[in-house]
Length: 457
Image 1 (tube, rainbow, N blue to C red):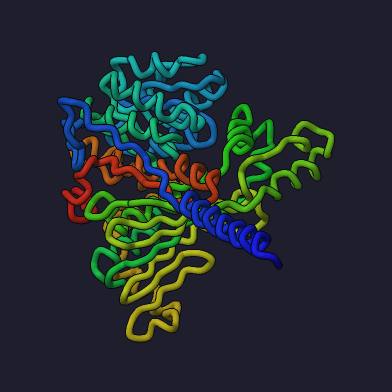
Image 2 (tube, rainbow, N blue to C red):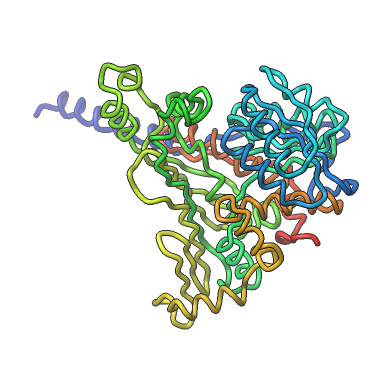
Protein backbone atom coordinates (compact mmCIF):
# COMPACT_ATOMS: atom_id res chain seq x y z
CA UNK A 1 0.00 0.00 0.00
CA UNK A 2 1.51 3.37 -1.07
CA UNK A 3 1.67 6.33 1.28
CA UNK A 4 -1.30 8.11 -0.36
CA UNK A 5 -3.59 5.09 0.10
CA UNK A 6 -2.30 4.59 3.65
CA UNK A 7 -2.99 8.23 4.44
CA UNK A 8 -6.48 7.98 2.96
CA UNK A 9 -7.19 4.78 4.89
CA UNK A 10 -5.97 6.34 8.14
CA UNK A 11 -8.12 9.41 7.48
CA UNK A 12 -11.21 7.29 6.87
CA UNK A 13 -10.60 5.25 10.04
CA UNK A 14 -10.02 8.43 12.03
CA UNK A 15 -13.14 10.08 10.58
CA UNK A 16 -15.18 6.93 11.28
CA UNK A 17 -14.03 7.05 14.91
CA UNK A 18 -14.99 10.73 15.17
CA UNK A 19 -18.41 10.07 13.70
CA UNK A 20 -18.91 7.13 16.09
CA UNK A 21 -17.94 9.21 19.11
CA UNK A 22 -20.14 12.10 17.96
CA UNK A 23 -23.06 9.74 17.33
CA UNK A 24 -22.63 8.19 20.77
CA UNK A 25 -22.50 11.64 22.35
CA UNK A 26 -25.65 12.66 20.50
CA UNK A 27 -27.61 9.52 21.40
CA UNK A 28 -26.47 9.51 25.02
CA UNK A 29 -27.23 13.18 25.64
CA UNK A 30 -30.09 13.71 28.08
CA UNK A 31 -33.20 15.40 26.72
CA UNK A 32 -34.03 18.20 29.13
CA UNK A 33 -37.62 18.89 30.08
CA UNK A 34 -38.40 22.57 30.81
CA UNK A 35 -39.68 23.45 34.28
CA UNK A 36 -41.67 26.68 34.01
CA UNK A 37 -41.38 29.07 36.96
CA UNK A 38 -44.24 29.20 39.41
CA UNK A 39 -46.67 31.96 38.42
CA UNK A 40 -46.63 35.00 40.65
CA UNK A 41 -48.95 34.70 43.61
CA UNK A 42 -48.93 30.89 43.71
CA UNK A 43 -47.35 28.66 46.32
CA UNK A 44 -46.92 24.92 46.54
CA UNK A 45 -49.91 22.78 47.49
CA UNK A 46 -48.09 20.15 49.52
CA UNK A 47 -50.32 18.93 52.36
CA UNK A 48 -53.14 21.10 50.99
CA UNK A 49 -56.10 21.10 53.38
CA UNK A 50 -59.45 22.64 52.49
CA UNK A 51 -62.53 23.52 54.48
CA UNK A 52 -64.47 20.42 55.63
CA UNK A 53 -67.56 19.42 53.65
CA UNK A 54 -69.96 17.52 55.95
CA UNK A 55 -71.97 16.18 53.00
CA UNK A 56 -70.03 15.94 49.75
CA UNK A 57 -72.18 16.58 46.67
CA UNK A 58 -70.75 14.51 43.83
CA UNK A 59 -71.15 14.91 40.08
CA UNK A 60 -70.04 12.01 37.87
CA UNK A 61 -68.77 12.65 34.35
CA UNK A 62 -68.46 9.55 32.17
CA UNK A 63 -70.73 6.65 33.04
CA UNK A 64 -69.18 3.82 31.05
CA UNK A 65 -67.36 0.91 32.71
CA UNK A 66 -65.52 2.86 35.42
CA UNK A 67 -68.07 5.60 36.02
CA UNK A 68 -71.13 3.38 36.43
CA UNK A 69 -69.24 1.12 38.85
CA UNK A 70 -68.22 4.18 40.87
CA UNK A 71 -71.85 5.32 41.20
CA UNK A 72 -72.75 1.89 42.61
CA UNK A 73 -69.86 1.99 45.09
CA UNK A 74 -70.86 5.44 46.32
CA UNK A 75 -74.19 4.02 47.47
CA UNK A 76 -72.27 2.45 50.37
CA UNK A 77 -70.57 5.66 51.50
CA UNK A 78 -71.80 7.96 54.26
CA UNK A 79 -71.84 11.73 53.92
CA UNK A 80 -72.37 11.95 50.15
CA UNK A 81 -75.10 12.95 47.74
CA UNK A 82 -74.95 12.13 44.03
CA UNK A 83 -76.31 15.39 42.64
CA UNK A 84 -75.27 15.25 38.97
CA UNK A 85 -74.77 12.64 36.26
CA UNK A 86 -73.19 13.29 32.86
CA UNK A 87 -72.47 11.16 29.81
CA UNK A 88 -72.52 11.70 26.08
CA UNK A 89 -74.78 8.63 25.85
CA UNK A 90 -78.16 9.46 27.50
CA UNK A 91 -78.92 5.78 28.15
CA UNK A 92 -75.97 5.57 30.51
CA UNK A 93 -77.30 8.50 32.52
CA UNK A 94 -80.63 6.70 32.80
CA UNK A 95 -78.93 3.51 34.01
CA UNK A 96 -77.16 5.38 36.81
CA UNK A 97 -80.39 7.17 37.72
CA UNK A 98 -81.89 3.72 38.24
CA UNK A 99 -79.04 2.86 40.60
CA UNK A 100 -79.90 5.92 42.69
CA UNK A 101 -83.59 5.01 42.65
CA UNK A 102 -82.93 1.39 43.64
CA UNK A 103 -80.96 2.64 46.65
CA UNK A 104 -83.60 5.12 47.76
CA UNK A 105 -81.63 8.18 46.66
CA UNK A 106 -83.11 11.27 45.00
CA UNK A 107 -82.66 11.69 41.27
CA UNK A 108 -79.61 13.62 40.13
CA UNK A 109 -79.46 16.45 37.62
CA UNK A 110 -78.74 15.13 34.12
CA UNK A 111 -76.20 16.45 31.62
CA UNK A 112 -75.55 15.10 28.13
CA UNK A 113 -74.07 16.32 24.86
CA UNK A 114 -70.49 17.09 23.83
CA UNK A 115 -70.04 19.79 26.50
CA UNK A 116 -72.51 18.65 29.13
CA UNK A 117 -69.57 18.28 31.49
CA UNK A 118 -69.00 22.04 31.42
CA UNK A 119 -72.52 22.69 32.66
CA UNK A 120 -72.05 20.13 35.41
CA UNK A 121 -68.84 21.85 36.53
CA UNK A 122 -70.65 25.19 36.55
CA UNK A 123 -73.45 23.86 38.76
CA UNK A 124 -73.85 25.31 42.25
CA UNK A 125 -74.95 21.90 43.52
CA UNK A 126 -71.63 20.01 43.14
CA UNK A 127 -68.58 19.92 45.43
CA UNK A 128 -66.63 17.11 43.77
CA UNK A 129 -66.39 16.30 40.05
CA UNK A 130 -65.57 12.60 39.59
CA UNK A 131 -64.19 12.07 36.07
CA UNK A 132 -64.28 8.70 34.30
CA UNK A 133 -64.09 9.72 30.63
CA UNK A 134 -61.50 8.78 28.00
CA UNK A 135 -57.95 9.97 28.68
CA UNK A 136 -58.02 13.04 26.45
CA UNK A 137 -60.70 14.71 28.60
CA UNK A 138 -59.25 14.02 32.04
CA UNK A 139 -57.22 17.19 32.37
CA UNK A 140 -59.61 19.58 30.59
CA UNK A 141 -62.52 18.57 32.82
CA UNK A 142 -60.44 18.64 36.03
CA UNK A 143 -59.04 22.09 35.25
CA UNK A 144 -62.47 23.46 34.38
CA UNK A 145 -63.96 21.97 37.55
CA UNK A 146 -61.31 23.52 39.80
CA UNK A 147 -61.62 26.88 38.06
CA UNK A 148 -65.30 26.76 39.02
CA UNK A 149 -64.57 26.04 42.68
CA UNK A 150 -64.95 22.25 42.60
CA UNK A 151 -62.60 19.53 43.77
CA UNK A 152 -61.64 17.06 41.05
CA UNK A 153 -61.04 13.30 41.09
CA UNK A 154 -59.88 11.92 37.75
CA UNK A 155 -59.28 8.45 36.41
CA UNK A 156 -55.82 7.30 35.31
CA UNK A 157 -53.73 8.63 33.76
CA UNK A 158 -54.57 12.11 35.00
CA UNK A 159 -52.74 13.69 32.05
CA UNK A 160 -51.22 12.50 28.79
CA UNK A 161 -48.73 15.32 28.21
CA UNK A 162 -46.27 17.39 30.19
CA UNK A 163 -48.29 20.49 29.39
CA UNK A 164 -51.39 18.89 30.92
CA UNK A 165 -49.39 17.90 34.02
CA UNK A 166 -48.40 21.54 34.54
CA UNK A 167 -51.98 22.65 33.93
CA UNK A 168 -53.14 20.44 36.80
CA UNK A 169 -50.37 21.58 39.14
CA UNK A 170 -50.84 25.27 38.41
CA UNK A 171 -54.61 25.08 38.72
CA UNK A 172 -54.42 23.41 42.13
CA UNK A 173 -51.84 25.91 43.35
CA UNK A 174 -53.93 28.82 42.06
CA UNK A 175 -57.42 27.69 43.11
CA UNK A 176 -56.43 25.74 46.27
CA UNK A 177 -58.87 23.01 45.22
CA UNK A 178 -57.97 19.33 45.42
CA UNK A 179 -57.11 17.21 42.39
CA UNK A 180 -56.73 13.49 43.01
CA UNK A 181 -55.88 10.91 40.41
CA UNK A 182 -57.98 7.84 41.14
CA UNK A 183 -55.07 5.40 41.38
CA UNK A 184 -56.89 2.50 42.99
CA UNK A 185 -53.86 0.18 43.08
CA UNK A 186 -52.36 2.24 45.91
CA UNK A 187 -55.21 0.88 48.05
CA UNK A 188 -54.86 -2.81 47.21
CA UNK A 189 -54.30 -4.92 50.30
CA UNK A 190 -50.81 -6.29 49.55
CA UNK A 191 -49.58 -2.91 48.30
CA UNK A 192 -50.80 -1.20 51.48
CA UNK A 193 -49.16 -3.87 53.64
CA UNK A 194 -45.79 -3.49 51.88
CA UNK A 195 -46.05 0.29 52.19
CA UNK A 196 -46.60 -0.13 55.91
CA UNK A 197 -43.66 -2.53 56.10
CA UNK A 198 -41.41 -0.13 54.21
CA UNK A 199 -42.40 2.76 56.47
CA UNK A 200 -41.64 0.60 59.51
CA UNK A 201 -38.18 -0.30 58.16
CA UNK A 202 -38.84 -3.99 57.54
CA UNK A 203 -37.06 -3.89 54.16
CA UNK A 204 -34.26 -1.65 55.42
CA UNK A 205 -33.34 1.01 52.87
CA UNK A 206 -35.50 0.41 49.82
CA UNK A 207 -33.13 0.54 46.84
CA UNK A 208 -35.07 -0.75 43.84
CA UNK A 209 -38.70 -1.32 42.88
CA UNK A 210 -40.38 -2.89 39.88
CA UNK A 211 -43.85 -2.16 38.58
CA UNK A 212 -45.97 -2.95 35.53
CA UNK A 213 -49.26 -2.97 33.75
CA UNK A 214 -49.33 -6.29 31.91
CA UNK A 215 -52.89 -7.01 30.88
CA UNK A 216 -54.10 -8.68 27.70
CA UNK A 217 -56.62 -6.12 26.39
CA UNK A 218 -56.69 -7.10 22.72
CA UNK A 219 -60.31 -8.25 22.79
CA UNK A 220 -61.47 -5.12 24.63
CA UNK A 221 -59.62 -2.76 22.30
CA UNK A 222 -61.39 -4.24 19.27
CA UNK A 223 -64.87 -4.74 20.77
CA UNK A 224 -67.01 -2.04 19.17
CA UNK A 225 -70.14 -2.86 21.22
CA UNK A 226 -68.95 -3.45 24.78
CA UNK A 227 -65.39 -2.09 24.60
CA UNK A 228 -64.12 1.45 24.92
CA UNK A 229 -66.39 4.24 23.68
CA UNK A 230 -65.65 5.21 20.08
CA UNK A 231 -62.64 2.84 20.13
CA UNK A 232 -60.67 5.62 21.80
CA UNK A 233 -58.04 3.39 23.38
CA UNK A 234 -57.31 1.56 20.11
CA UNK A 235 -56.98 4.90 18.33
CA UNK A 236 -54.50 6.09 20.95
CA UNK A 237 -52.44 2.90 20.61
CA UNK A 238 -52.42 3.39 16.83
CA UNK A 239 -50.69 6.75 17.14
CA UNK A 240 -48.49 6.47 20.24
CA UNK A 241 -45.71 4.34 21.65
CA UNK A 242 -43.86 4.34 24.99
CA UNK A 243 -45.83 3.60 28.15
CA UNK A 244 -49.32 5.14 27.87
CA UNK A 245 -50.60 3.65 31.15
CA UNK A 246 -47.85 3.67 33.81
CA UNK A 247 -49.65 4.62 37.01
CA UNK A 248 -51.16 1.33 38.22
CA UNK A 249 -47.73 -0.13 38.87
CA UNK A 250 -45.79 3.06 39.47
CA UNK A 251 -48.12 4.68 42.01
CA UNK A 252 -47.69 2.21 44.89
CA UNK A 253 -43.89 1.98 44.57
CA UNK A 254 -43.56 5.75 44.20
CA UNK A 255 -45.30 6.08 47.56
CA UNK A 256 -42.92 3.51 49.06
CA UNK A 257 -39.96 5.53 47.74
CA UNK A 258 -41.36 8.82 49.10
CA UNK A 259 -41.40 10.54 45.73
CA UNK A 260 -41.79 14.31 46.32
CA UNK A 261 -41.85 13.55 50.03
CA UNK A 262 -38.09 13.30 50.51
CA UNK A 263 -36.95 12.08 47.08
CA UNK A 264 -37.79 12.82 43.46
CA UNK A 265 -37.54 11.13 40.07
CA UNK A 266 -34.62 12.62 38.12
CA UNK A 267 -34.66 10.97 34.69
CA UNK A 268 -35.76 7.92 32.71
CA UNK A 269 -34.71 5.80 29.78
CA UNK A 270 -37.31 3.86 27.83
CA UNK A 271 -37.27 1.24 25.08
CA UNK A 272 -40.05 -0.66 23.35
CA UNK A 273 -40.17 -3.85 21.38
CA UNK A 274 -41.58 -3.67 17.88
CA UNK A 275 -45.32 -4.10 17.48
CA UNK A 276 -46.41 -7.66 16.74
CA UNK A 277 -49.36 -8.78 18.85
CA UNK A 278 -52.01 -6.21 17.94
CA UNK A 279 -51.41 -6.56 14.20
CA UNK A 280 -51.49 -10.34 14.36
CA UNK A 281 -54.66 -10.34 16.44
CA UNK A 282 -56.38 -7.87 14.10
CA UNK A 283 -55.53 -9.91 11.01
CA UNK A 284 -56.65 -13.19 12.62
CA UNK A 285 -59.90 -11.71 13.94
CA UNK A 286 -60.93 -9.37 11.12
CA UNK A 287 -58.86 -10.45 8.11
CA UNK A 288 -55.81 -8.92 6.48
CA UNK A 289 -57.89 -6.75 4.15
CA UNK A 290 -60.05 -5.23 6.89
CA UNK A 291 -59.33 -1.73 8.17
CA UNK A 292 -58.10 -3.18 11.46
CA UNK A 293 -55.94 -5.74 9.67
CA UNK A 294 -54.27 -3.08 7.49
CA UNK A 295 -53.70 -0.54 10.28
CA UNK A 296 -50.16 0.13 11.49
CA UNK A 297 -50.16 0.21 15.28
CA UNK A 298 -47.43 2.34 16.85
CA UNK A 299 -47.54 0.89 20.38
CA UNK A 300 -44.78 -1.65 20.94
CA UNK A 301 -45.83 -4.93 22.52
CA UNK A 302 -43.54 -4.46 25.54
CA UNK A 303 -42.24 -1.18 26.87
CA UNK A 304 -39.63 -1.08 29.62
CA UNK A 305 -38.88 2.20 31.34
CA UNK A 306 -36.11 2.67 33.90
CA UNK A 307 -36.24 5.59 36.32
CA UNK A 308 -33.46 6.88 38.57
CA UNK A 309 -34.27 9.02 41.60
CA UNK A 310 -32.31 11.91 43.08
CA UNK A 311 -31.22 9.73 46.01
CA UNK A 312 -29.94 6.94 43.80
CA UNK A 313 -32.92 4.57 43.85
CA UNK A 314 -34.19 2.88 40.69
CA UNK A 315 -37.62 1.87 39.38
CA UNK A 316 -38.48 -0.38 36.46
CA UNK A 317 -41.93 0.11 34.90
CA UNK A 318 -43.28 -2.15 32.14
CA UNK A 319 -46.35 -1.97 29.89
CA UNK A 320 -47.81 -4.73 27.71
CA UNK A 321 -51.48 -4.96 26.70
CA UNK A 322 -51.09 -7.12 23.59
CA UNK A 323 -49.43 -10.35 24.73
CA UNK A 324 -51.27 -13.53 25.83
CA UNK A 325 -49.88 -13.75 29.36
CA UNK A 326 -51.26 -13.57 32.90
CA UNK A 327 -52.11 -10.22 34.46
CA UNK A 328 -49.30 -8.61 36.45
CA UNK A 329 -48.39 -5.33 38.12
CA UNK A 330 -45.19 -6.99 39.47
CA UNK A 331 -45.09 -4.77 42.59
CA UNK A 332 -41.57 -5.73 43.67
CA UNK A 333 -39.78 -4.02 46.55
CA UNK A 334 -36.08 -4.68 47.19
CA UNK A 335 -34.22 -3.23 50.16
CA UNK A 336 -31.08 -3.75 52.18
CA UNK A 337 -32.87 -6.10 54.58
CA UNK A 338 -35.60 -7.74 52.55
CA UNK A 339 -37.70 -8.27 49.46
CA UNK A 340 -41.37 -8.54 48.53
CA UNK A 341 -43.30 -9.15 45.33
CA UNK A 342 -46.95 -9.58 44.44
CA UNK A 343 -46.84 -11.17 40.98
CA UNK A 344 -46.63 -13.87 39.70
CA UNK A 345 -46.98 -15.09 43.30
CA UNK A 346 -47.02 -13.19 46.56
CA UNK A 347 -43.67 -13.73 48.22
CA UNK A 348 -41.56 -12.12 50.95
CA UNK A 349 -37.94 -12.78 51.92
CA UNK A 350 -36.19 -11.16 54.88
CA UNK A 351 -32.82 -11.18 56.57
CA UNK A 352 -31.12 -13.21 57.96
CA UNK A 353 -32.41 -15.87 55.56
CA UNK A 354 -33.35 -13.79 52.53
CA UNK A 355 -32.13 -16.44 50.08
CA UNK A 356 -35.44 -18.19 50.66
CA UNK A 357 -39.03 -16.99 50.62
CA UNK A 358 -41.01 -17.17 53.81
CA UNK A 359 -43.38 -20.12 54.04
CA UNK A 360 -47.07 -19.37 53.61
CA UNK A 361 -47.84 -19.51 57.34
CA UNK A 362 -44.98 -17.16 58.21
CA UNK A 363 -45.85 -14.78 55.37
CA UNK A 364 -49.53 -14.67 56.30
CA UNK A 365 -48.56 -13.97 59.90
CA UNK A 366 -46.23 -11.15 58.84
CA UNK A 367 -48.87 -9.60 56.59
CA UNK A 368 -51.32 -9.73 59.48
CA UNK A 369 -48.88 -7.90 61.74
CA UNK A 370 -48.33 -5.20 59.11
CA UNK A 371 -51.88 -5.01 57.82
CA UNK A 372 -52.47 -1.39 56.89
CA UNK A 373 -54.81 0.61 59.17
CA UNK A 374 -57.12 1.30 56.19
CA UNK A 375 -57.50 -2.40 55.60
CA UNK A 376 -58.32 -2.97 59.26
CA UNK A 377 -60.79 -0.10 59.28
CA UNK A 378 -62.74 -0.66 56.09
CA UNK A 379 -61.36 -3.81 54.46
CA UNK A 380 -64.22 -6.13 55.34
CA UNK A 381 -66.85 -3.82 53.83
CA UNK A 382 -64.58 -3.11 50.85
CA UNK A 383 -64.38 -6.78 49.97
CA UNK A 384 -68.17 -7.02 50.07
CA UNK A 385 -68.74 -3.90 47.97
CA UNK A 386 -66.04 -4.92 45.51
CA UNK A 387 -64.35 -2.90 42.83
CA UNK A 388 -61.19 -4.75 41.81
CA UNK A 389 -61.34 -6.82 44.96
CA UNK A 390 -62.18 -3.88 47.22
CA UNK A 391 -59.37 -1.42 46.52
CA UNK A 392 -61.68 0.88 44.55
CA UNK A 393 -63.98 1.23 47.54
CA UNK A 394 -61.11 1.95 49.94
CA UNK A 395 -59.93 4.65 47.54
CA UNK A 396 -63.39 6.24 47.39
CA UNK A 397 -63.81 5.96 51.15
CA UNK A 398 -60.52 7.77 51.80
CA UNK A 399 -61.27 10.51 49.27
CA UNK A 400 -64.64 11.30 50.86
CA UNK A 401 -63.24 10.93 54.40
CA UNK A 402 -60.53 13.52 53.69
CA UNK A 403 -62.97 15.94 52.05
CA UNK A 404 -65.46 15.64 54.91
CA UNK A 405 -62.77 16.20 57.52
CA UNK A 406 -60.74 18.89 55.79
CA UNK A 407 -57.62 16.73 55.50
CA UNK A 408 -54.87 16.54 52.86
CA UNK A 409 -55.51 13.79 50.31
CA UNK A 410 -53.45 10.59 50.28
CA UNK A 411 -52.70 11.19 46.58
CA UNK A 412 -52.15 14.83 45.66
CA UNK A 413 -51.75 16.70 42.39
CA UNK A 414 -47.98 16.17 42.40
CA UNK A 415 -48.56 12.41 42.47
CA UNK A 416 -50.94 12.83 39.55
CA UNK A 417 -48.40 14.82 37.55
CA UNK A 418 -45.32 12.77 38.40
CA UNK A 419 -46.89 9.40 37.67
CA UNK A 420 -48.69 10.62 34.54
CA UNK A 421 -45.72 12.44 32.99
CA UNK A 422 -44.18 9.06 32.17
CA UNK A 423 -46.72 8.83 29.31
CA UNK A 424 -45.09 11.56 27.22
CA UNK A 425 -41.53 11.18 28.49
CA UNK A 426 -41.33 7.44 27.84
CA UNK A 427 -42.57 7.98 24.29
CA UNK A 428 -39.99 10.72 23.78
CA UNK A 429 -37.20 8.41 24.95
CA UNK A 430 -38.40 5.52 22.76
CA UNK A 431 -38.66 7.71 19.65
CA UNK A 432 -35.11 8.99 20.27
CA UNK A 433 -33.46 5.60 20.61
CA UNK A 434 -33.78 5.18 24.36
CA UNK A 435 -31.91 8.34 25.37
CA UNK A 436 -32.26 9.64 28.91
CA UNK A 437 -35.07 12.15 29.43
CA UNK A 438 -35.24 14.48 32.42
CA UNK A 439 -38.32 14.18 34.65
CA UNK A 440 -39.41 17.64 35.81
CA UNK A 441 -39.81 18.54 39.46
CA UNK A 442 -43.46 19.49 39.62
CA UNK A 443 -43.03 20.76 43.20
CA UNK A 444 -40.51 23.32 41.92
CA UNK A 445 -37.95 22.63 44.62
CA UNK A 446 -40.23 21.59 47.50
CA UNK A 447 -39.78 17.82 46.95
CA UNK A 448 -37.85 17.36 50.22
CA UNK A 449 -40.12 19.60 52.29
CA UNK A 450 -42.00 16.54 53.59
CA UNK A 451 -40.40 13.45 55.11
CA UNK A 452 -42.44 10.53 53.88
CA UNK A 453 -46.11 9.89 53.13
CA UNK A 454 -48.38 10.49 56.11
CA UNK A 455 -52.03 9.47 56.10
CA UNK A 456 -54.01 12.00 58.09
CA UNK A 457 -56.84 10.87 60.38
